[in-house]
Image (tube, rainbow, N blue to C red):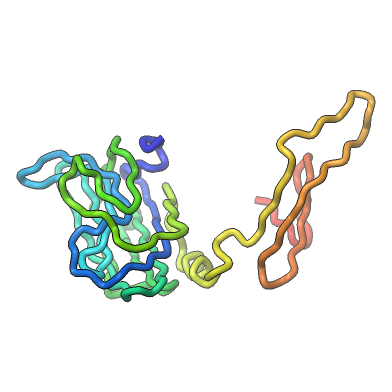
Length: 220
């Protein structure tokens, strides 16, 4: 559902990150993400948000319905897998671009407070044709993430970047969807598999009744 609440940022903080690999181009509006509704064609006005490339420069567009903010970001290298992130906070008003895990101070910005709300579909790698601005992305996008009501801290952005080829999810746990237990039984065997692709050994705890605090187990 492209209109679910956690894709409509409204006045909430949010973050986006992804790995991209794109060829050199001077094209304008090469879309990475587009969730905009056209409010007016003249003057051009949208409601929602979009993330795209102008040439090789990242750009975040925020449309409030009555005003727009076009925010330039860092320049990405051609034909190279590059990780980027952008975070937007309204209290305080602060926006940060990241490139390969490092904050880009030269592109710090103060976002305008408003409701970037749109009922349009959430497009990846192409523009919303109903808006009339933007072109398809020629290149690759991997591990795109959108964080609603959350500003990624710098340490987390660096952690995502440093994960590299291992990706953001180093552990894979597979459990059965249903395990039956007969009324006269006091125990049941549950078989599951864990694949740890991290570079170091891990410890795991599993419980139906809540997890105690212990080595390898953090209870929030």
